[in-house]
Image 1 (cartoon, rainbow, N blue to C red):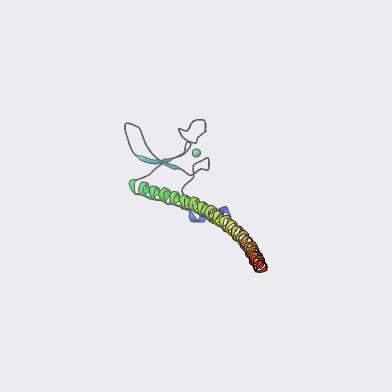
Image 2: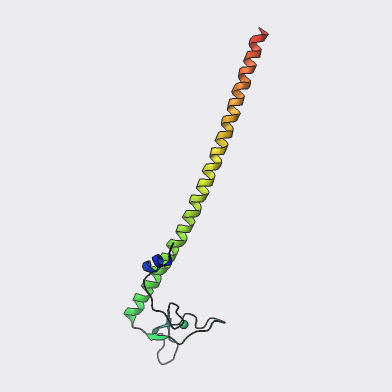
Length: 128
Ligand SMILES: [Zn+2]
């Protein structure tokens, strides 16, 4: 599967200077507490360098961004589900093969039993 296919399905979110999709954050300054803004997702993560991307947004954009994130999350879940479904399908096929094998073996056994039964009745006939 090409990655462009997935890119088309996800709603485009702006990227920060390190070319990563930005995350919604809230300012923690005492002057403007809880103000939404878009920032580098690597900020505050241990060890990873981050950039100084900063974009203040209003509450409409905040909701839009949250919806986009939610939508992308759903798409990811859909992809995960598809993977699980593929696995289930594979397991189903394997099980079907095994059932076929068992059925074949049962057929062989039952024909052998038939032959044995025929032999027994033959013997019984001979005894008379
Ligand atoms: Zn960044």
